[in-house]
Image: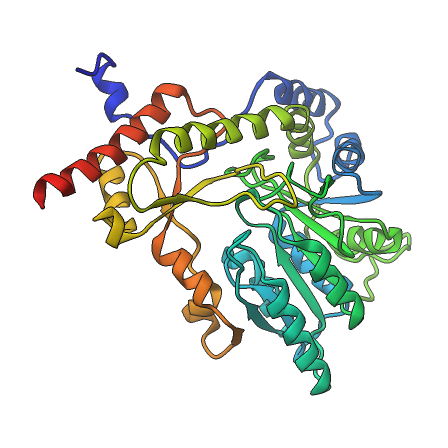
Length: 389
């Protein structure tokens, strides 16, 4: 008999809610006390410097979202209308939308089984083929999915071989490593997100990092409406209103101080789920590739209906009936109506992961009783199918 109160048993358990503490509020108070509210101020400079120290990059630009950072990154490497940009297909739509912003076309690359990220062999073969055709992509966007690093080294080597800029979408992988180095710091430009569901949040925000100072200088210029250095408002290029506010940068500074704790909590969530559920037939957890440590931003599992007797969607609905939020793995972008007609290479791996994959509640504030409630709901869904059969 469950001794937990009834309201706990019916209260919502969210997938990945914001997790704030007291440190963030102190920085926000400083912004209010000094009246640094607009999108300039000391917190922005400090946040950029502190963030770069954490990830190991030389220069950073804090902007309004990860999507804004990707948009700027593509423009910085010269993407123009009619260009093609190679991109991971198993990812959120925000990865590829900026390609469309610039009038370019995405070229979607399938995943590998080891990391669920872009398949290095497929990318290398595709770039070789495009090179023979005289149609090299203008850039490659490599996603590090659900906190797991892609196999960066062969992808970086392929990009260098054909002199194609590499942009890392590390929106979901802040705190993850590849061969001991932070994701987002290998390519020409790295991009991070501080959306409310990410490992750390600024409510909404993003960061663009690079070891090339001219790229970051240009990013900041474009992000502040591309205002020319003049005593009056003069503009020779099209810019954007993309800079992060000083207030939100203060939240980011506080969040950054507890990044390692947030990663540890999410890895503990994964370990707890794995211990409790791995015995169930037909269930597998997203692997941790041998070349790096995942943050386990979200705990992802797949269900094999023939072995489990139940499929992903039945599990998701069973959890929803218990007021527990779980979501399918990203629907591959090459299957999205928005990108109908775009070229894709492979796709079977990403499609399979979408059909069978589910993301479980994984917030760093998730409690042990809440995890147990998720586990019990999944076990009960399995038991119900067996009784029915």
